[in-house]
Length: 325
Image (tube, rainbow, N blue to C red):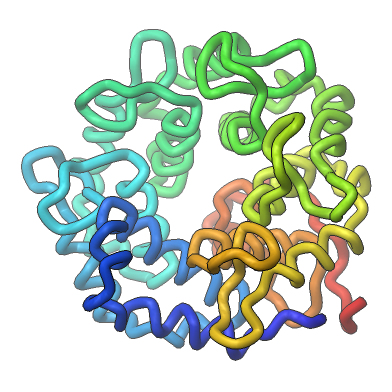
């Protein structure tokens, strides 16, 4: 089975036309993130133009929270760090960063860093290493990484490191593949990968591969396509992608495609969604799948764009193949 790029492009295009479906309204809290996932997947598949640029920019700006100085997930939603990062990523990919009030956004992001070094997601105070990574990525993309307390952030990540080399969502939390990605990515941005126990963590990440070829988030859990990115991104940053059986993982991702309507599910036979479509395609890119564009595993954005911005770190993907397996 091969990656059906035209069908997946069509699937993403059709997502914005489903306003009458209940699921569309039930996922309003993820809308701006979903636009980022769709655009990033299209960029990786070489079809950035498949969605209307001006309409996308207009929607992003409609999510601006004037009072907070950040972006909500949907118009009239409160500003949150996750959606603010997605807005920044979209505007950069669409060459529209001039639309952004950068000083206000930077101020909003910096205000969310706590004395311990971690970031809260919003003014309501939930903390998570995800938000620390979002803050680091956003400030780095805006050229204002110096505004955050980098030393405190690194100290917090160090406190979240576990005996297995992995990282959790907060101090004392168990290791999880997604949290490993956000911590490793943040450390790469902060130029502090020396904090990582590379050999132990790479072994733990390699143990996430199941007999099906898919990867799970932690021991004794089911494999899931999204971990194709979370695990591979961390291994790519650590230059340890050879710890994974790439052919088996590629086959697993491809088996989760919907051959009729397009899109990729969490695992074969389940309903597709744009989240797993994006991270499935992202994983395939890092695996060197043919006819895909290079993806930067730190920022989860087009690699050539991050390189032009002078932000590329020393990650390595597998060589781009010319034929499918």
